[in-house]
Length: 529
Image (cartoon, rainbow, N blue to C red; front, side):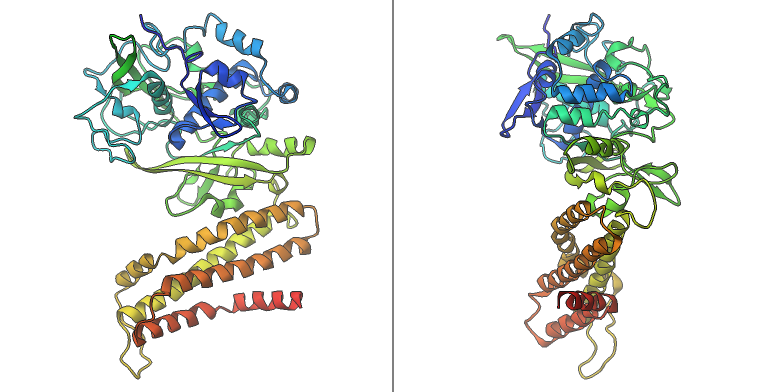
C-alpha cells in the first residue's frame, strides 16, 4: 500500500538564509525553523495556506493556551525543541493522520467520496483553467489532464481547504467559499520561520479568537477529530478548528507506476463544512468598515496597493471599527522587551469574481510597533499617517482633473481664437485619461517615499507634535513633485502640433492651480531658508 506521510516526505517548500529553495517534511520545517527563512510556494495563496497549517501545528502542540509566559519561554529558546516536535508527531492520535494516502484517514481528505465521478486535478489549482475558470498562469485544461507528484498535490490539497472558491452545485449543499476568500492574510515575518510562527501565534486571547484567557480554546485541529459522515453548516469552534477548516470533501485518485512512483491523477470533490455564521474575527486579517456593509474583512483591490490604507492598518482593532489584524497588538509588547522596532509583513490575497479567480497578489509592508495606535488622542502619530494619505489622495484628484482637462482639449478643442470650453464626451475623456497611465505611476513613485516617511515618524514617535508635523510638510512636497512628474511623463509625447501643445498647457495650468500645495511649498521654502 503506497504511503506519503507529510511528516517526513519532502513536500513543503522553504527558503534557507541564502534564498535557496528546499522541500522538507513537517518535522524538518519545525525542527529547523530557526534556520529556514520562510515558506515560499509557487503562488501567494498556497504560501498563505501552508503558513496557516504550520501555525495550527505550533499552536496545537506548543502554545495551546494564550499564556504570555509560555510564549516568552518559546521565544527565548530560539528554536523548537526537537524532542517535543518528535513527541507531537509520534502521538498515536496523530502519527498516521498526516499520510496523504492513508486508506482510512487520508490527510485533509475523506475516504468516502460523495461525488459520482472524479474531477480533474486542475480543480485543486487556482492558477489553472478548469470548467469555466480562466487560465491565470498554467495552461492545463480538463480535456488533457496530467498526473501530479504527491508533493505538488499535497500543497494543492492544503491550499484548497483554505482558499477554495464557492459557487456551483454540490452535496450536501452548494459550494461555499473557504476561509481565505474575501480577505487578505497579514503574515508577520520574523528573522526566521521560527520567529514568524511565534509572532503570528500571539498569546493574547483576541488573537486566538477568544475573549478571555480562561475561555475554552475550542476544538482540536481537523486531524485529531473523528471524520464526519456528512459535512454541515456549523459555527467555527475555536482557532485550531478554523485554521484547519475542511472546506471541501476531497478524495484523491492515484496510480502507481511500474517503477514504484505514485502520482495523483484525479480528485473527488464536494462541499465540506460551511462556516455559519461566517467568521468575522480572523486574527490574521484586518478589518474595514463601511456604512452599507458594516465591519468586514479587509481585502486586496486590483487598483490599490496596501500601503494606501496604512491609516486603517496601523490602528489597533476596536469593536465596530476597522483596524489592523489582531496579531499586531502583540508586536508592541515584543518591541518593548526586545530591540525589534520594525517588522516586514507579507500580505497575501486573491481577488475573485464569484467563483473565478481574477488575480492574486503578494505585497509587503513595514509595520512599526511605535506607530500602532490604540487611542484617538491628538498627539499620536496615527494622525500624521492619516494626514499624509489625505494629501496624497487630494493630489491624485488634482492630477486626474488636470489630465481630464488635457484629454478634453485633445478630443474636442474649441474653435481657434475662442475661449469656449471643449465639448468632449465624458466617457471618451475617461478612457483617454486611463490610457495615459499617470495615476498608477503616481502611486508607484510614492510608495518608497511613504515607507521612508513611516520610518522617520516611528523614529520620532515620542517627539513633540510639531517635529512630526514637519515630516508631513516634506511629504507634501514629495507628493506634489510626484504628481507633476506623472503628468509630465504621461503627456511628454504631446508636442507634435498646436492642439497638443495647448492641451498640455491647459492641463498644466489646472495642475498648478490648487492653492493648498502652493502654500505647502511656500512653507517649505521659508523653513529651508
